[in-house]
Amino acid sequence: MQVLKFGGSSVANAENINKVISIVQQASQKDKTILVVSALGGITDKLITSATLAAAGDETYTEHLAIIEKRHISTVQELIPVARQSSVLSAVKKQCNEIEDICNGIFLLRELSAATKDRVVSFGELLSSQIISAKFSAEGVENVWKDSRELITTDSNYGNARVDFETANKQITAFFNDKLQNLFVLPGFIASNAAKNTTTLGRGGSDYTAAIYAAALNAKILEIWTDVSGMMTADPNQVSNAKIIPHISYQEAMELSHFGAKVIYPPTIQPVLKRNIPVKVKNTFSPQDPGTIIDNTATQNGNIIRGITSINNVALLGLEGS
Ligand code: ADP
Ligand code: ASP
Ligand code: MG
Picture 1 (cartoon, rainbow, N blue to C red):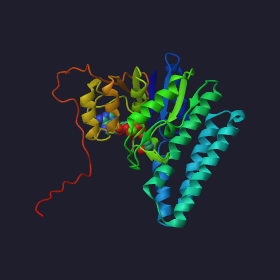
Picture 2 (picture 1 turned 90 degrees about the vertical axis):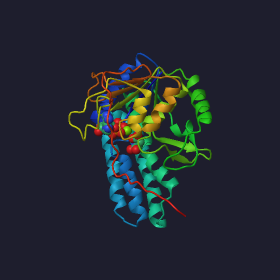
Picture 3 (picture 1 turned 180 degrees about the vertical axis):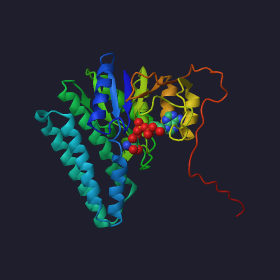
C-alpha cells in the first residue's frame, strides 16, 4: 500500500490534473494506491470568502459562488470526454446548489458558525476528489471514491479538529482491508465528529489526511506531491538560492514545518514517524526530480544547519502581575 497526496496547485485545472492522473496511473501499477487530493487551488479561500461575505450581508457572495461553480464545470468539460460528462456534471451542479443554499441561509441569518464554515469549505475537497475519480473511470481505470468523513473521526473543534485515532484507525482498516480494488480516491482535509457533522483538520490539512491513512494501513510510503521539488533549505519565495534538501530526518522535517516551512503541514509527520513510514516530497510539475526523503536514516551532510524558516506576523505578549 502507498499513499499519494496532491495539493491545490497540482489539481488546480484540467491540465494539471492530467499530470496527476499520469503519475498516479504509473504508480498504481506497482502497488495498491490511495490518492488523497486537496481542493482545486484557490477554492478553499473562495469558499471562505463567499460564506464570510454572506454573513456580512454582502450580496456579492453570489458572484464568488458563480466563479466556484464555473471553475469546476469547466474543469470537468476540459478533462472528461463529452460522452462521460453528464453524471459528474450533474453531481457538481447538485453540490454547487447545496453550497448556494447554505450560503443563502448564512446571508438570511447573518451568522456563520465554525461548524457551518467547515461544512462550506468541505465542498472544495468533495468536488475535486469526485472529479478526479470520474476522470480515472473515464480513462478505464477502476477506482473507488470514498468520503473521508466516514473514515476519519475527530472532536468538535471545528476548523482545527483533533483526530480520534482509535476510532479512525478501526474505520480505516475495516474499510480498506476487504477491498480488492487497486486505486482509491479520497478527499483530504475533511473529517467528521461523533455526531457525523463535518469538521476540518486545519488549513493545509490534506497532508495530514494522507499521513493518517498511511499510518493506519502501515503503508510502504507516503508521497506528498506539490509545486516544488522537495523540502528546501529556505522558503523559495523569500530566498532565491534556496536548495533542495535530498534527505532529512523526521525530527528535522517536523521542526522546519512547525516553524514555517509550509511545504508540509506540521501534524503530518507524527503518525508516519510512529510507524517509521518514509515520506517523499515530490514535484508534480517535475516528477523526474528526486525530491526529498524524510525518514530516520538521514545523516549529517557536513553542514551544521539543515534549513532556515520564518513565521510572519508574530506578536509576543508578556503578562505579569494580577
Ligand atoms: P500544496 O498546495 O501542494 O499543499 P503548499 O503551498 O501548501 O502546497 O506548499 C508548497 C509551498 O511551500 C511551496 O510552493 C513553497 O512556496 C512553500 N515553502 C515554504 N517553505 C518551504 C521550504 N522550506 N521548502 C519548500 N517549500 C517551501
Ligand atoms: N484545501 C485546504 C486548504 O486550502 C486543505 C489543503 O489544501 O491541504 O487549506
Ligand atoms: Mg499544503
